[in-house]
Length: 211
Ligand SMILES: N[C@@H](CCC(=O)N[C@@H](CS)C(=O)NCC(=O)O)C(=O)O
Image 1 (tube, rainbow, N blue to C red):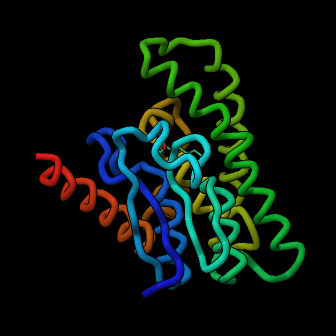
Image 2: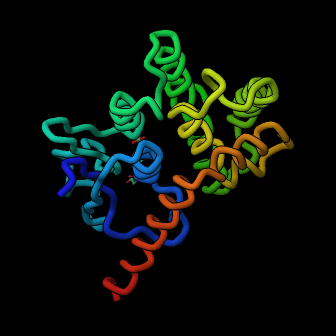
């Protein structure tokens, strides 16, 4: 049995299937050829039923031997330390990979998620639109100048940035051809396709268990 275990929910509604963030960790393991197993916590009662493992009642979290981590970004950096497929070993390359992982979370996702939430709750024209436009415009410029964020090759920074940018509502917002090409390039990888298909299949199978 693999020591590396990734936790997700036992079921989610159809909308988020293929987007639940355990996909980030599955994808990284597939890229790095790291053996892993999936386990679940109940979606129902998630606010309180696994707070010892994820203090916000969310997923994913992972266990790798004695290491226990929540936050998808922390999990990705842990996996990246295990494989140079995910992060270069030279100090400059590693630092730049970490920098772009943090940027994906703290400069892009920190505005796309609240914007998406407001849009979903009927406030499509909300006060975050200008802020998000600025961030996406800067990313469009960066991605117009290079195929990969770090070192001319795929890293976990691309995995995470593409996962943040591929959210359908965010992609439908504006016309950004370099970003579109980047998302297509990164999500065209076999590891992403496999990880996504396995997540979707697991949630579909859970429909039957729920009756
Ligand atoms: N910052 C967290 C966010 C985790 C997160 O938003 N997880 C979602 C699934 S993708 C979740 O558990 N949502 C249920 C909830 O918040 O109650 C991470 O990156 O791990």
